[in-house]
Image (tube, rainbow, N blue to C red; front, side, top):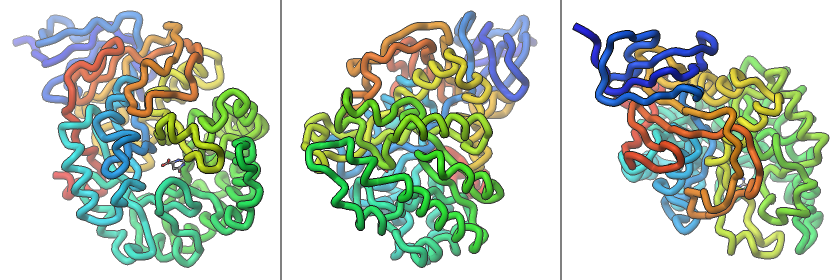
Length: 445
Ligand code: DOR
């Protein structure tokens, strides 16, 4: 009897560990059941992907979706709507909500709110603090926990562990890879006067290169001492790259599309919309980040989607909050760099699927392979589009890339065999499930 699938993706150019080539994919019960010519099979639904590339589902390991507590900026539904509209199938969400995600109860509350309501799959970072340092080993193993996240420099919200002893207390206890916002709070405090009222261009003068370098060197030293595995988020300086290159055994690194695409020259155009922590810097650093990407020092991409309303962003600097949207524009902005020859499609795929799966031990995602979750980002590499605020799924309703012309566009988002977005339309809504991790499979069962 011929094989029967729930869904067949036909004639797409599949990009996976096997290379790039035309292949058909059969999906059954949310998983990839067969890859190949698949002649004579039948399926409940068939999608013709001729002319399109079928990529492993894009996983964005750094988003702020603001629920609970800051729901006027975003919530788990609207943030995940932006994600799937942008081709993202899974996210790791950040703990600086209100209340902070620093305990079993606050994590369980987020999981309850997210399950089946979010449009993509999800995991949540748990905030590491001085108070919970003794229990991070238990917290990081809870269902849907991505790991422990620590802010060494203050940003939106009150999470902060600025001193070496505090960081050491956490890293002595973590067993999974812990993520860090690495800016030196002591230096930031000492240089507050560098902020010029009304002038957002002073943001990267205040939060300078040395603030990032000094924090990252301290962090790497403590991680080495304690034998911990760490992940340094949103690298913004050329100067941190040699430090990270010397620490690949235990430290991985993330880079954002905005640090690779925008520069301090864009303050004139964007004003406080460009204000972000760590800051977008001079082209010298942006060019350095591309070198870090090409050489493999930078492992993965994360959007650091950090929405604030336009009213909030309209406040005069430094009352204006730091952060910009990004989860919906990660794929088109980076595919445009692929079209311009700045990175290969294979590298983009590695940085957004296999890379996160390797670093964080994601179970059953990150590859197009039989037995894996049927998560796909379907893209048209030739399509020319203009990014516009009006396309935004985010409650914030704006993007720093408004009016950017790009080549390459996400046309479909498929999560565990369910079409979530096709041609810009939200298809079957909701359905999000916790991402599973190989180190904590018992917890997620
Ligand atoms: O600019 C930022 N905004 N950087 C962060 O690390 C936090 C984020 C936010 O939550 O608004």
